[in-house]
Length: 248
Length: 286
Image 1: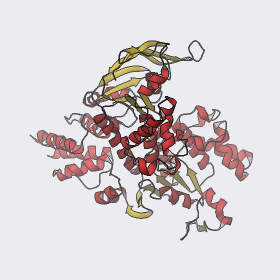
Image 2: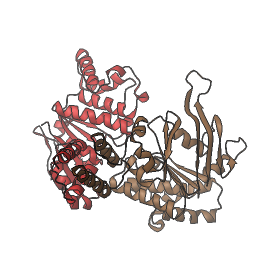
Image 3: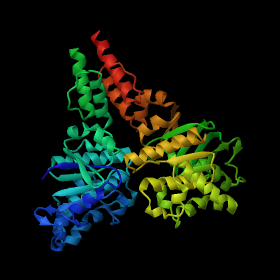
Image 4: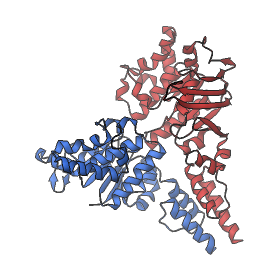
């Protein structure tokens, strides 16, 4: 509960399949998935599971159904038969959470990609799930849209929502506490970002690369610049180098 | 093919209450065989410019010369221009439609009226240029291919028209790192071996810095900066004010500079950046 897990791997490694197994969009051929103790193989559990595990997909245009932002966010709640009063409250609360309340009456097709994904996230949040699976939710967005969505993810993580982020973008993986790397349907690496990004051989084997800042820190260590092992963010590297500069 | 743009202006819905000026007074020239990176935030006019270059839009004002001939002239045969300036749209794989890869790639030359005997040759040639094997792919359905392969097939479809200029709009968006590398390597080959003039439109500054010989930056429909990657990314402040980010390494170097390090920002290789930082650490130590 409350973990932020990032799933990485090349195309065809099974990332999306893994995501879809989590909320019973797919049922495992062998093995089991338990969500809050509920087995996804039992079709009586399907709706309870999907309410607990929300999903945000890659293309915002494929998941927006309403003609107005607030209508779109209410869609899932209508399907659950939530009373009107409660529905209004949840729509407002969750549009506020993603910073889109002032757009409540807007037609979604006039929003930017990043805004659309935030509306999609609000729609999922309105169902009050415990976890959200995001399947390459930022890969079609421009840099501004990406950073908007990432900010929301960091905030949701602080609020205690469990996040499972499927991505190709290494810099994005640094937001997570735990990383899983899949290759050909198997887990090849699992651990904290610093543990995983330290395994450059294995990463290369999976056609992946540690983020630039991690590789730069390594290149500096290789040239005997005394940096600590844990450097994942640009700010950390800059701070450490400033400390070094003063102490030399 | 040499491209010369003079005072290009484009207004959507000119004269209407919602008219929007997408480009204003943009002038530049591109030499034959150059590799250009075209960047700017969403809404800066990149797509409009690119569509003018291949004759999909006519500029409201200004002229566009391709090898000296003016294509903004109304008498010009636009089909010929579109064959000479190939445009690969964003997510081009969404436009794949035919039953086989061969038919899909043949669509462009067929429309140009290329004789039947020659079409087969062009299809094979185009597939080879993007690194796909015609024998094994020609008769397959494009929909059975991976995302990266589909995109290569779409590029082949444009190459089969034998364009002199190739414009690629966000050609690596949404691909995994491996697919990205493959496509970029192919594009570099097209530039080096085929001497194609290439215009790469991208939000990925690392990609732009690595590939382009010259960069054009648009902001709110105006051309605000022009220069080599080293020149452009040395002006970190200007790039940021255009709503753009720096490539990853220049971003780190810029942050260090703000904290008193004396470093250049326009460095695109990790080993080189590490050498500079190390040198600066010891210089400071005296």
